[in-house]
Image 1 (cartoon, one colour):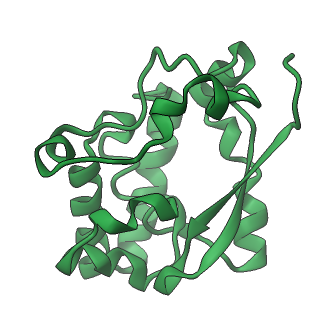
Image 2 (cartoon, rainbow, N blue to C red; image 1 turned 45 degrees about the vertical axis):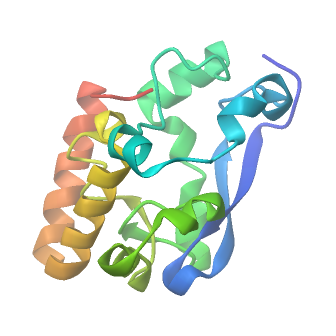
Length: 169
């Protein structure tokens, strides 16, 4: 519906901070970075980090088709390629963008000790409504409690969240 490629590719941090290329269906305008450079500065103070939420329902970068893709979570479908390649797992912390690594300290870095996942404890515990720090807290909890049973629980809760379209934008 808008000019640009169907697939979006972006460098993300995987296990042990290794870079890999994440693949998704494009949901932003292809020139979103030029249209809204202020949204790509990634400069935050300590107080700002406490309330920082990355996704918003009225994000001007999202195309009309992109809104539908995000609402249905179909934009993530190409992530299966990353799982097949071994860059990602079905469950694990969602892959982080390299620009955010300066904001990780101490125990927060544990989230990089496992492969990132298609879904995560944070993803099924609030999705886009969680702050940056809340998401990291869920990720560290996941790493500390990791088990097959927890993965099954997360997959089940994710399926329910996707069907309900909770905080999907």
